[in-house]
Amino acid sequence: MASTQPNPNHEPGRRRPAHWPPVENGNQSKLLFVTVNTNKRKPILANPKAVDLILEAWIKADAWLVGRYAIMPDHIHLFCAPNRPEFEIEHWIRYWKTLVSKKWPNPDEQPIWQLNCWDTQLRHGESYAAKWEYVRNNPVRHGLVSRTEDWPWAGEIHVLEWREP
Image (cartoon, rainbow, N blue to C red; front, side):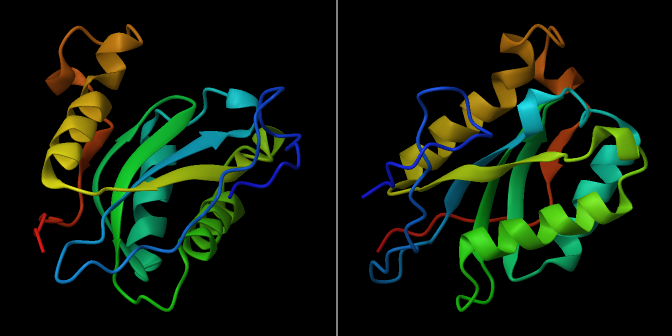
């Protein structure tokens, strides 16, 4: 059950997200869809330096593996899977956000991140495909590019394959 405590870094009326641990379901993949926003939705992420810092942090913070992702000006969508299950998702996210913040080149843009993020465990393969279509079309919906393949800040670090139980 989600906490009813208001979060000052979220828009009015929003509540803190519940971070449930990934559910074991036989041999099924444990993939999470995560959205992380910048503090006050500042459009500071879609540039080469920011993207390099984020990718570097994800590679260093290897307790979770990042699959497909899209880095937008004010938020990030990513798919990830546990590499070391003893690390909870919120601790991993806090760690890589700290790595990025410590190397951030513009001190006047601190704090960079909202305190919380949103994560959802994918339950079936169609959900993965549908959510990826949503993510890869995000730059087009926001009017940043006319074709998805023109957005330079999307990609895949690790291939996270879906396995049914």
